[in-house]
Length: 102
Image (cartoon, rainbow, N blue to C red; front, side, top):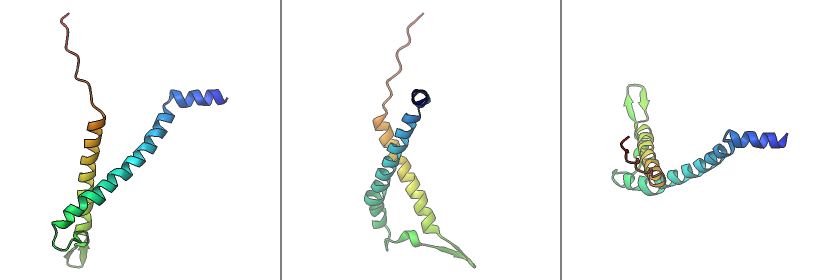
């Protein structure tokens, strides 16, 4: 029974998936730290007060959290770009083999 369960785990890639989830969590922390500690202070330096994430836009009785929304969008774009650069550096594809005439 245990051998059958082990074979199931190996056959369906469950162990590889578990490893990918653990590594993904670690990469998420790393990329989050790069954005929060290295990139966002530079962005904050370009704003007059530095607390641009608290900016709001009031339209009548409605108050929009414009700074928070723009911060989330900027975080997403920066994190996406950092992940793209990391993946591109780690996963290099081999050029396709030249076609041979038949």
